[in-house]
Structure formats: C-alpha cells, structure tokens
Image 1 (cartoon, rainbow, N blue to C red):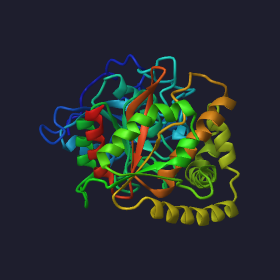
Image 2 (image 1 turned 30 degrees about the vertical axis):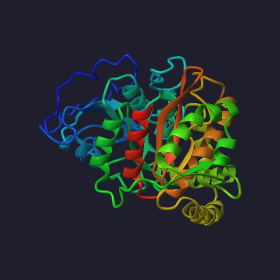
Image 3 (image 1 turned 90 degrees about the vertical axis):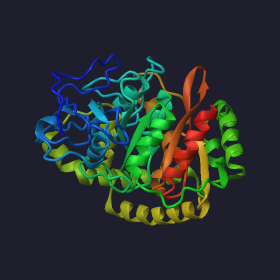
Length: 401
C-alpha cells in the first residue's frame, strides 16, 4: 500500500487530527469504498508509526507498530483513503473529549460545547466535513456519545463482530471498533465492508420503548425524541413499552464500571505505575479508583453480569429493536466543573450506555432531534448479530428525516 508523503495533517480548523504521529495512506485503486476518505482514532496501529493512545507519555514510551490494524487495512483494501489520525481522550477513559495535553477538538455543531469522547477527534472530523467517515472505539459509549453531541451517525457493532487486531485494548470484555458518518448511505457502505455477511436481513418486527431509560432523562429530552420514536414505530409496525432492568439501570452501571475498571487497570496499571504520567481531571480520579477495585468485587460483578445478560436476552429477542435516548442531555459546555460533568452527565449517560455494553449488543445513534438548536441522538439497539438490520433501518429512518 503506497503511503502518502504528507509533511503534516491536512487542513484542520477543528483540532481533530494528531500532529506528532501523523500518517496518511492511499487506498486501493478500486473497491466498495473507492472515492471515500476516512480518519482513524489514535488507538489503531499503523505499521511503521507510533500510536499515541491520547497521551504523550504513551507515545514516547512505546515503539512503532509492526502491523496495521486489521480494520484499517480492510478499509484501505476496499479503496478508501486514510487522511490522518484523530485525537482521543487519555487512554480512552472518558466521555468528554477534553484532553489536557492536546486540547479539545471543536464540536462543529456547537463550538462552545464539548464534542464528547473518547473518539472526539473522529467525531469532530466527520461532523466538520473533513472526511466522509471515521473509525472510533466504543467501550462505554465512546462512539455513541460523540455521535449524539455532534449530530452525526455512530455505530457500536455487536461485541466481537469487527476485528480488534492491532487496536489498543481498554477493557476487552466491552471494547468494540465502531464508526461515524454524516450520510446514511456511506454509513451503511462502511458497515457492509466491516461487518461481512449477515445471517438475517429481514426487517425488524417490534419496536421496544425502553421506559426506564426514558424515565432517566429530563422531560424535554424525552419530548424532543417522541416524534423520532413514532417514526421508527411506524416503520417497524409494532410498538411495546417495557422496563429493561428489573433492578434499575444504575445498578447495571455499577456492575459495568467495576468490571471495566478492573480490566483497564489489569491492562495498563503496570505502565501507569512505572511512568507516573499526568492525567486530566476525571480520568485521574477514575484510574486511582480502578487501582483499588478488589478481586471479590469483580467476582460478584461477574455473577451479576451473567444475570444481566440473561435478562437482556429475555427482553430483546430476534426481530426486536430497543429504542432509547443516546444521552441524557445535549453536549455540555467546555470546562464544566468536575462535580457537574461526572455526576449529571457521565453517571446518567452510563446508565443508558451500559445496556448495550453489558449485553454485547449493536447500537446505532441517529441524529434525529434537536433541543434548543443542539443535536440530540436517538438510539436503536438490536439483539446480538442484528448489526446489518440496524443499518438498513437507520438508512430508511434518515431518508424520512
């Protein structure tokens, strides 16, 4: 594959691209994605280049990659052209997009507000029209939240559906490689390349309105999403209301965060203790907490996780689409106090986002609503393996919008 010889990242009015480890790659001369451009979150390895993982000390202390991430190579082989790497939150352990070392990529839909993280640069590049689509990763919501905040499409595929070979791990039990796009046709084209053949492309039969998820958000958010929910229900044909969790979504989030934290510290704790890197607000506190998670907590949470997955499989069956808000709010302002950004935003968002994470389910965030001029995402969640079905439904809904 011929590498472009760019001296630095392309024109970037949004601060989305990495500068210190910039790389651009030409795609194949033809293929399903020929003519499209894309950007790559700086957690995907590119052969001969360093991967920054959102932190200058990580970039400094790790060698250049020997191979290119399988998902990146797949896109190149299908004719797409990679124009650069994009900024990430530090070690991808945040949902804000505010990086103390590299700054905050601009949210093109709301420049005075955060883009969301940790796939902040990729979302910013897509929303700003710098590329046709971009790769991100999503462990706890790092594609879905930026998609909602920036007013673009974002996909978290079924856990294990898209290869993570050559991608830095955060918490492997929940990590997935996802993508963003503005255009529904492009969004689906990328999905058809990355997801491969689907076992069942039949239309969904039932829309499930997640009552407990909508009850967690402010009334004006739920109200603004009503019309989009109705459009989805009309398209599918049947709507039912239910509560996803029998014990409450906050308890599900508690299970998720303990399991996630234990895996993060298991993967990266030794490096943190060895290098003593500086972390920004929120991330520093979370990593300190992660270092103190006890084995007995993990054991208990694994038992709870098994029960949660059984409940999810009971609720969301073949032919079902679960409907819920992507985020409890629109994008918050930049540099909000930690106590505000961590509780009203992160905690409440994670109560929504943990459903797909714990179930290993595919989820799409669609930019179908606004609140006071700001983007607001509606999410559709399918059973495991229903990724292509969700993409087809997404295309149909976006054409109605």
